[in-house]
Length: 132
Image 1 (tube, rainbow, N blue to C red):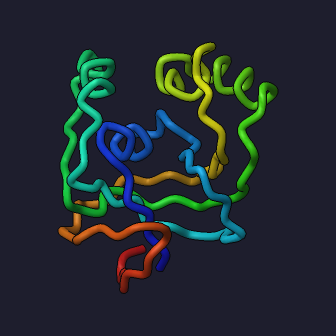
Image 2: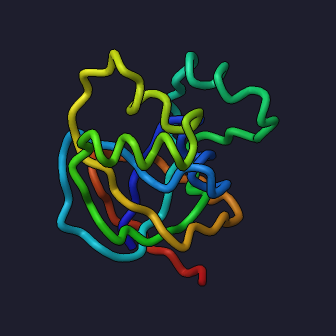
């Protein structure tokens, strides 16, 4: 199964169903099931922003599975949609001073799983997953 490695706290925000898009500077044609891997990297500034959520932020493990259903360019229309969905979660992408450009991978059917220790990789990578 395909896997994507994501820094914390963003991997946990996805696993908890709070974040429905993962943002990258590259686009993907892949559609289908994907595992969410919480990498060892941490965005310390973002961790402070979400500390009031009282969530666990494991690292170096696969923590959820989802389905990539779309890959869309992040334009002003999408930023408006994200602002409506959850301004706090999508802050980094929708803030006015942001010059970031890239794509949002739309994630659906997000499900937390029992963490599986694994070493992350760049881009989409493969993992033999036996779970349901």
